[in-house]
Amino acid sequence: MIVLAKEDVLKGLKKFKRLAKQDLLVSPLTSEPVFWTKQAEGRRNTYDRLMEIINDQGVDHAYKSALKLYAELPFVFTDKMEEAEVIGTSQALEMFFTMIGVQPPTKRNLKIPPINYHTEIEDIALNATHK
Image 1 (cartoon, rainbow, N blue to C red):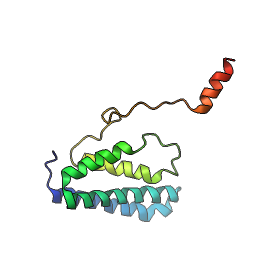
Image 2: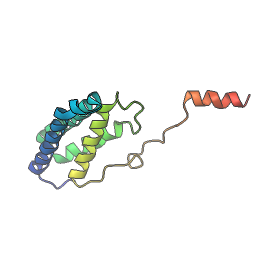
Image 3: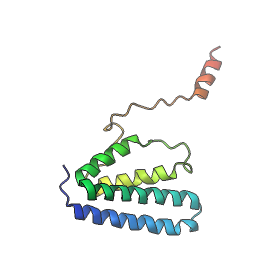
Image 4: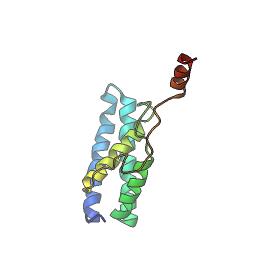
């Protein structure tokens, strides 16, 4: 159970959202403007979603929803540019967990099965050397 007041959590999320807005505004000035724009948008959208849940159902429900969403996110990003918004979502959820005084969950805590790091190409290469 999260014991922080709804208003305090909303105030913190609004500040985080303002920071994401500032990042969005300066993203065209970076070396990778598309990435930073999408990343900031992912953070802002996540903060909006969390604020809506808190307003409608409370902080505890927002925490449970954040855990579920975080568990569904990939832990390895194959293409940083294509997954910039997902990276922003992940960062926003981690900031939310920290703000409410909860350690961001680890892969082990979420009981996600270990990733099979062998790709089809690696398997083909391994089989070719043994023939």
